[in-house]
Amino acid sequence: MSDPLLLDHESTVLRGNPLGDPCRRRIEVHLPPGYDGVRRFPVVYWLPGFGAHPGLAGKALAFGSSVADRLRLAMTDGRVPPALLVVPDCTTAYGGSQYIDSAACGPYAGYLAEVVAEIDRRFATRPQAAWRAVGGKSSGGYGALVAGMTSPLFGAVVACSPDAGFEHSYLPLLPRTLDTVGAVGGVDALLARRDSGPHDVPFMVAMSLVAMGMCYADDPRTTVPDALPCDPVTGLFRDEVWQRWLAHDPVRMLPAHAGRLAGLGLLHLSVGRRDEYGMHWGVRALHAALDGHRVPHVYLEHDGGHQGIEHIYTEALAALWKLWREPEDDVCAA
Image 1: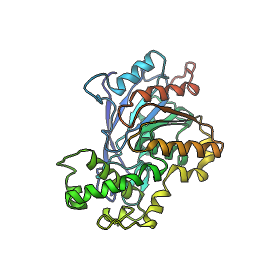
Image 2: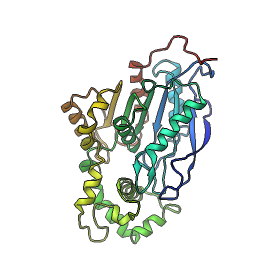
Image 3: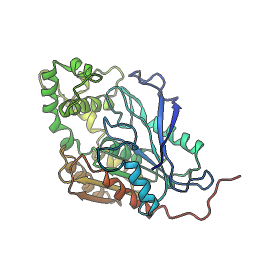
């Protein structure tokens, strides 16, 4: 894929956010084959997972090509409909925002809406919800699901291994997180390692639960220890905190938002049967709940785990052909 365009964008909604994170962000934009600034194209907004670099141009591994290169090739040979591919930067001091408006982290659903408006302003897009898709993996898949539930901006959702069924995906990680916090000397010591490392799997798991707790907190004064569902020293469980987490679980959110999801042109879910974080059980639960509410959707399980599944993105985005057939001579107004 040709080099991406890197746009500097000054956010209005992120000014003065509770964590003091930058309000000036970079947006990575990949143009589709045949883009000339005249013909209008649909847009895929891709949301990276927790702790991931906010872009698709780099290689995930030393071998093979980047995700962006794979998708451009798939657009060129017709497997995926040609579209702009846009990657916003919604990272926070704790690694991720879950792409939601959070009292303790900042209004990242609002920021995503700002990005959509900026892309429509700068590029030849088809600026209607029916021609916008939001997708992502892991926390990005979660963000895509929640956007599909709560925002009128998107007409399609592609969620790969999304956070869902929090009893399956989060609770089993709590003891490991407590062990990691204790081993490094407490929450403050854990946070101090963000810039220096080591950034091994136990650290990333612990930081992911810290980020979730802060994202789901309902008070800007919430501290990291108070955001966790249990006391990080004694392990004493706090049901009132856990209930705040569950209020953001797509499985629990579904009854209030089934109508909007049912109105999507495409709701595509996929997950690996060997997911290391138990995401397959959470996504299976979501699949069953969607069936129970008669929400049309595509549900696929593959043989992979949580990592190394970038090839799944191409297969998932190919489903957008259902919505995006080649328009006839749709050009910008003079």
